[in-house]
Length: 319
Image (cartoon, rainbow, N blue to C red; front, side, top):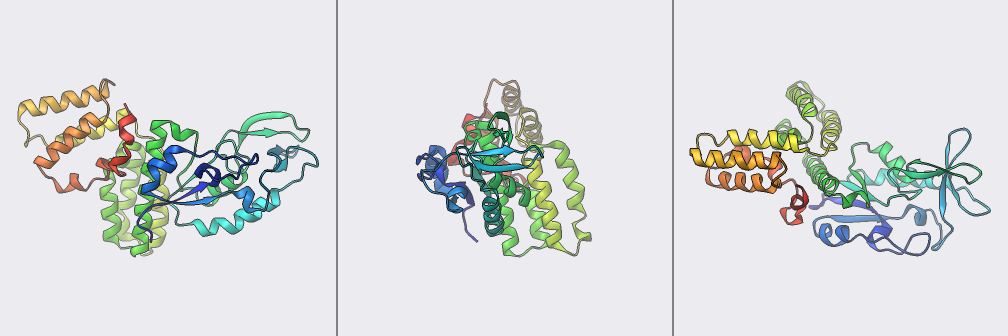
């Protein structure tokens, strides 16, 4: 298995001139900052089904029966729905080990949400559609992290997406190496604080599920359900409230190791983050300092401290 996460990506976002107008939508963060840490699998579904570059723009048409069709916006309004669906049926089974997918927003083939719908007369309707290719991918791989280029400009959504692709990559690697109860339990143990930061109710629900692992004979079936639950929890962006709870939980591990001045300082930094006066890196950096001085095997194993390479600097933008 590849040492780096393999991430699918709409071809136009890499700078490939495959858009309907012969242009591209190269995304600097994706191709400059993230590229050293992942391997990309680019695809333009519209080119893949044989459409030329340039080409007339495509639209999603909602028929009077409620069906969604993909047609050219200009006469003769050829319908390419079946061609796109057939491509998705062939292509999607080949990407089961991807760690994520970055799609082009607003595209009738790749858009993840709020794609413009039209009626059969060409009148503009609601922004309520999903591109045909992406809709098929989301249906086949509901656990797969999928994000649009536009939403990746939001620091919180960007950090959440990158954390998810590295988590899924690690989980996929676990399966590729051969599942064991020990490896599954060790993985879950490493992710406990990260899950708590993302969704407390999900964290409480997945715990008893993992605790019953000893009752399961089919580890692959367990893996499938665990992957679904894990990725559903991580889909929730970590909130300031949940981060604060995790930071205070970690603080408790140092109660005896720190003197009163250090404990008070740490508490003030955590409360400063909770109040919005300090970025999350402030308490995290201080906790890492104390962890280096007072090692704790459980804390040192926690994915929460480094869910992705620190050099990406994703937490720098999170206040």
